[in-house]
Image (cartoon, helix red, strand yellow):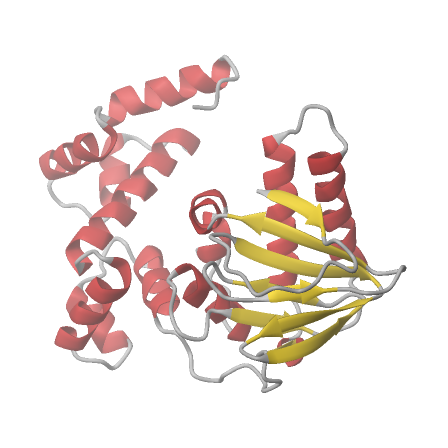
Length: 284
């Protein structure tokens, strides 16, 4: 990830980036070009642009200060999973999900509200770490970027508009609801129960999950259970029998086999390794 100041008076030219781009107007104003339109952005406005979207930014006043935050889509999904798994719902959360899945409606979102001091402080700290420190701290930069997206998730949805000026679409993106429901019910969830809880057919749900995630329901559930098991091994004193129960397994041998396939070691070795790493401050 990086953060750069947009050059004033530099002619606007449409281009595509392989990064998520967050445009923040720190001072003054700028024009944002997208799909043949120029959208005026003023102080405190934020615009999030998905990778691969053709766009341009132009500022032409001495007082204009526009910051561009750039990060890869993969960095967002790998570094900030807590944002995606937080259970947040609504137009803004849906946009994030559509953006990382490269789905229609996840191309651009503009926040045209008033300046937010807490957001601005995080952006300035990120800029100082990125631009002014001789040795940049990846941990600090990730923390600041997480805070930035978390603050945006809390914004009033009335301030979130599409580039054409319409209010955010009301139609929900169902995938995050399905995933959150699965995570919260690992001990007992099945394809049939999930379909019943959301009033859809099992066939539709199975095809939808496969299309959106690339995994079958069973494979996705197994990944969630293994991730939960790893978290319990690392952060709790639960014995193996309890972890097997909490992750929805009835056969301990299947649990051991799946865990070793996922992490390359047994649960007991995994716990010992993680604790040893923490003891020596390695956090691997």
